[in-house]
Image 1 (tube, rainbow, N blue to C red):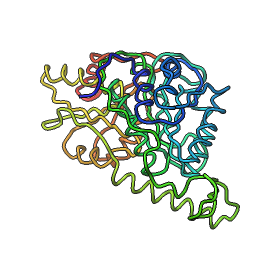
Image 2 (cartoon, one colour; image 1 turned 90 degrees about the vertical axis):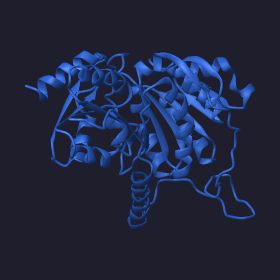
Image 3 (cartoon, rainbow, N blue to C red; image 1 turned 180 degrees about the horizontal axis):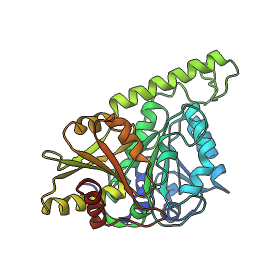
Length: 355
């Protein structure tokens, strides 16, 4: 068993970053994720592992510092909250186009605009549909606990380097601020061996210097690069889908929810079953790639699906695409930092499906 600590979600991200052998963190404070850089600064990880922690002058600077470090094969990461991630979108597109591995954490707050500092899930589109320009994707992990905030740092880096692309941990202010017991994984040494044939470290006896770029003025070459990226995303959809099923063996209806909404809905399905209503929960762990196949399979078993989110209705579109019109799919959400209760979810479900 690893070390046990009582940590906030944001603190768990920071401690996991040190233990995951991260070479460099570049960030800028923004509520509700400022504890990440605060914890890293107080822990002085340069003394523990040699990890560099730098507060950049802006989110734009932070994501471009990540680009620079990632191009040399280093484990680089950043974290922010919704408006800050918006500022990073150009850099994330560049990272994706250049096939550079990195880890990005978004502790989501309500919007649009500056919005509120309260929790929300209104960045689903931004994360999963490519909030920047171009036909690109990033891996998106959705933690539902402080434990997963820690675990997904290591997983996120592993996936980023396996596929040479950015990974995002899409959390929210609720999980970022809550405190839970966390079993921390054993520290991973920095500079773990991996294929470095692509990194920009200058000419070596074995190869010419590498040039890291997402630019090619020849449209046919650019198309081939895009086809290469799309093939990689196809492989992701075939091999890296993650999800959790809760009480889905005897279901009549299904709730699909991720992150903090999934935590709330675990209580909702318990309340519903106490009333004799057989509802199960499907929790996507990877939002991209989305678990479309299992949603489609469950659509053959149930009478209806409710997508529960802290937004105006975003993931529900992927649920409807996965169902392929077989059954009714509806959405229930709260916005602007308001959080639904388990009882509200049950009442909303009843008003939609059991009139």
